[in-house]
Length: 466
Image (cartoon, rainbow, N blue to C red; front, side, top):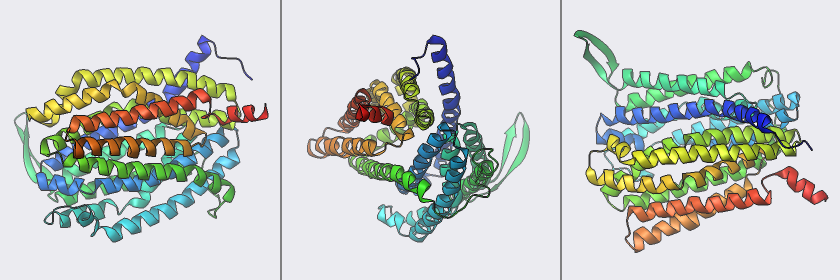
């Protein structure tokens, strides 16, 4: 076993970690920024337009949660074989990723399109908004094959250490989305800049234009990342068989299935949680919605580091290098906690101002600032959980995170929120306290897994031999 790292080696490994993480962080920053801009551009059309766009968003979380689970499976497998230096196995796995993308992408195109007329009714959307919500949903899910390619092929490339290509594709997708929004949502209009008047062309399609803009951007992104994978020097599936390969698919699905159940179960939990919040009245609903939007931006550094943790830990596991896995953990965790301390501190300090960007109602701002400051204090705990979960995904351990997340979501957040909001009438602050308790429980679970060493299969094997 290799000796522990000295300071110079630790700095070098930290540089590798940050070099792998920063493109993912930039990609997620861009996605969050575009979500803000999209919301504002559609919001200018009125409350009904906003409702039509947001009415079916939770269905999208369910769908993409399941698709992303396949990406987790391929990330673990490909990171492992890349670490072992097995280029042929990496190429075969990339070929199987193409097969899964074709099958899953086709299935998740046919099913949502077939149900697009019924989903708004199932989601209890107001009757006069349902036709518009249905049209938006149908157009948005037409390009599911390229969207599936973006999700799965992005994970394949990241598994081989290429985080820059998905970042570049994601940035361009967002730029195309904003540009097409600008041209398709609004009608032709005049503008004046520095005393110069000019005409801006526009299709005036409203909500339908917003859906079409996203569909065009997603299609371009899927095609571009498919081309990038095709040309990749190590992963290119060119000439690879598209017949099912049990040696690749069996371990991939073994990893992906628990992660899929985890994402499905937690997405349903978010729906139930939101429904309880909605019952508290429009002030609580507005404060909760805006606070969630604000909070999501402050988790970006954590999730960027999680991708790097999964890739590098998977590489080390494939190489059979147990000491490197320990070294990675000893560097990842302090960096992650430091990032989340800074992020949490910034959120705590800026909570009222950030709430004020999205609402002028003093009650909404005040309530939202309180819950944001509550969750800001818990961010370092959540950051630790994110990293350990990422390392476990990298080595293919997805069963434990499934149980941790489902227990936390349903036994703590949902049950606790039901008791607090529906039985005791304690309001939004109590519901967010249950959410923070959920995060604290995850910290306890992942800390125990880390201290026991159960996150590390090489340590488990060594213990079994001794």
